[in-house]
Amino acid sequence: MKKTMRAIFFDGAKLGYRSDYPPPEPQSGEATLRVLKAGLCRTDLEIIKGYMGFRGILGHEFVGLVEEAPDENWVGQRVVGEINLPCRRCSFCRRGLERHCPERRVLGIKDKDGALAEYLTLPLENLHLIPDSLSDDEAVFVEPLAAALRVLEQLAPYMEKTRENWRFCVLGDGKLGLLMAQVLKAEFPEVICVGRHPAKLALLAPRGIKTYLVEEEIETKFDVVVEATGRREGFSRALGLVRPEGIIFLKTTLHEEVDFNLSPVVVDEVKIIGSRCGPFSQAIKWLAEKRVNVVELIEAEYSLEEMKEAFDRASRPGALKVIFNILESSRRR
Ligand SMILES: [Zn+2]
Ligand SMILES: [Zn+2]
Image 1 (cartoon, protein in one colour):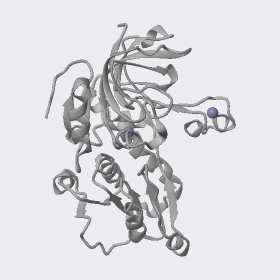
Image 2: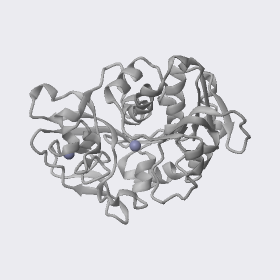
Image 3: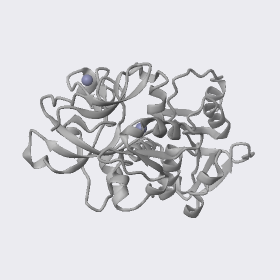
């Protein structure tokens, strides 16, 4: 391993490219990975606005090669990694709520250097092997796809025999919204997606997903609305579209606070479910079975040195997935 590495570091106020960052030291039980590719997501853009108060190397969507590990069998394997590092001692961890451990560190989000660097470390139990049939580009989507699949997990207890008749609405045509719509359509016949960008919505049409622009009137009430707009007004729109006793899944995390009237939730007995990280092994399986298409969601690829261009590109309204090729300075725009 090299003595210094290239990395994108956020000091709490400013983002900077560093060529002399010290490589991470693996803690007990941790593997050191060489990062191949890493994706940018909305969370990263929120972090640099102050969300989570994070300082360190950004990035939590990645694929890498295991360079060193406490178990030799892992060395040389291509992997992705779960981003939560629970304490495994507290009462939440002991009850199987590791993802909600109050002491948890989160890769590139909370107290743990992330993936926009040549190396990162993660506990072996966080790692998942990537089958050869998946490209690096596809593997970068395991984390966001798992987050979309989390909605299916959370929905399961509410699904009745009549599930075929349920109508689903996804608000938002960002990266997560487009993934979310594909995931739901793979399981249920009636799925619509509401967004602002005709070109992005057009990616869904070949899959039989009906799309609407935000300004269009929608008469239907939906059994399930997934709010993935990344905007503060998304929540009230979701309330306006859900049927009484229906379910709203909230996927947006915002740095800013949102004010809204809770009365309709009470009167219509709406269930509101927050939804964050999901099952990695299932996401890998879905990608291997080609149940969703993620490669078409990649907008551009940059090297770490091109940090500014990459973040500017990812911040543009309507931007799709921007990924970093950590090994080289190859580009694809
Ligand atoms: Zn993310
Ligand atoms: Zn814990």
